[in-house]
Amino acid sequence: MEGGCALLAESLQWLIPDSQLMVVGRIDEGVSDHVLMIREDGEAIYIDYDGLQFEHELIEKMRQECLSDCIGIAPAKTFLFTDSDLFWLQDDVLGFSGFLESKMGSVDADRVSLTWLDGADCGPGPA
Image (tube, rainbow, N blue to C red; front, side):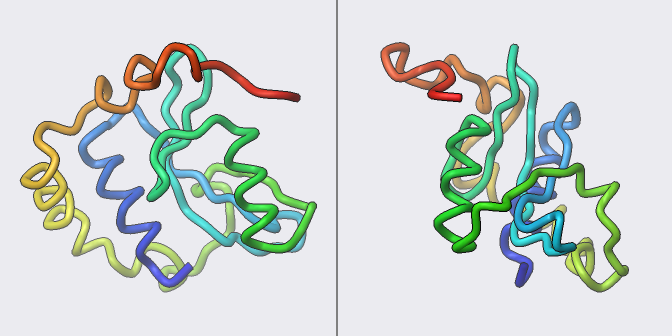
């Protein structure tokens, strides 16, 4: 929660308006450890610095990262942040969105779709 994950998620959301900001972490303890973006493509696809992930992959990653089995996911807008907790870098979003497009080409809903995943590895894992 030092700002990098929120900057990436908000910048991607700027480019992909049908997406939503989410927080993940020790939500039941009032701790959001990470901000990312979600997009529905038949099922939820979470996008952060690790790329596209299904919910079970995200939860497992965060269990290891947070050293906790109590990991939850919530919409960022429902998590109680002060103005300085998450959105303090709002002025940088437009610039970073432009940077992402300059390095990666057009970033839109089609670029964060399950069709980009290898068909053999695609699909939800164990429940």
